[in-house]
Length: 113
Image (cartoon, rainbow, N blue to C red):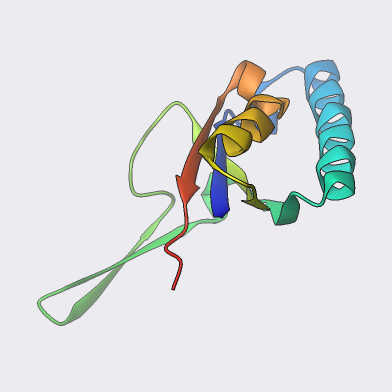
């Protein structure tokens, strides 16, 4: 079964450089391990929230606004698409991600056709 991991936390400019460097290195190791296990199908970091545009359509009118839809302490920093035997394995994979120690990871199953 495939799952999307939404990786949330504070952006890199809000943390000390040494902490960010360690997190980046640890994440690289996690990616290598999950790729080696054949669990991680695809993933990537996202650019900062100040590059985001939110799109809404209301009554036929398209409304655009800069930034994310909600003001929150944490932002979506990236994502990983994983394939696991079941939710238990997906949660084990997510709990091993370095960002789980400082932020949060939302794990959601994909609709399978």
